[in-house]
Image 1 (cartoon, rainbow, N blue to C red):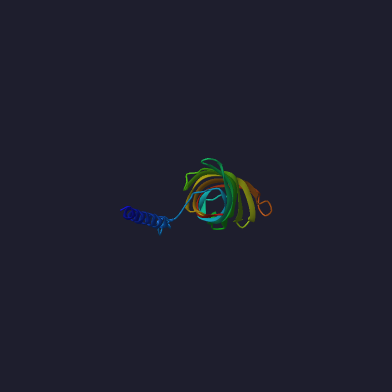
Image 2: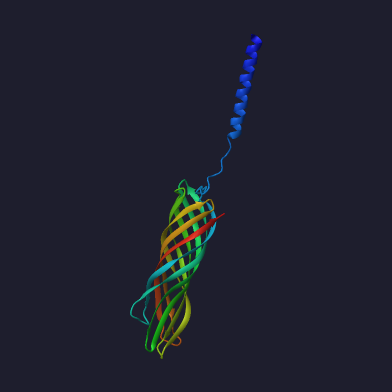
Length: 223
C-alpha cells in the first residue's frame, strides 16, 4: 500500500513539474502587434531634420513705394539641434536652421518696376519645453538672418543688389514622437529681420526692413 501511494505521489509530482516547465516555456516576450509602434518619448540627444512651410509679413522702406507692402511665399529647409533634460519634465536645447525662401513683394507700373525677394532665411535659437512623454510643447527664441535681393528701375534710377538682414525671432512649437528616433515638428515663429540700407550708387540711398510670420512642419531624426 505504501509503495502504491509513493508511486501515485511520484506520478503527480512529475505531472506538476512537467506542467510548470511547459508554462515557463510559454512566458516569453511577445513581439508588438503589427501596426503598433514602440515609442519611448525620450527627447534628450542630437537630431537633424527637414521642414516645409509658408511665410508672410510686411515690407517697409523710406524709398520706393507701391500699392501695398504685403509679402509672402513658401519655405523649404533643414534643421539640426540638441536637446537635454534640465529636470524631470523640463527639456532645454539649441537649434539652428536654414531654408530656401520664395517670400517676396513687388509691383509693376508702366515705366516703373520694383521687387523685394527673400532668397533664404536662417536662425540660431534656444529652446525650452515640457516633456509630455510622446509630446514636447516648447517655446523658442533667438537670432534670425535672411538674404535678400532688391530690384528697382524707373528709367532714371536703378537698384539691383543683395543684402543680409540680421534680427530676432520668437515662437512656439510642438513635437510629436512617432517612433523612438523620429518626431513630427510643428512650429510658428514671428521674425523681425531689422533694417538695412539699399541704393546709393545708381539711386538715392534708402532703408528697408521686413517682418514675417512663419508656419512650418517637418520631420526630425534623433540619434
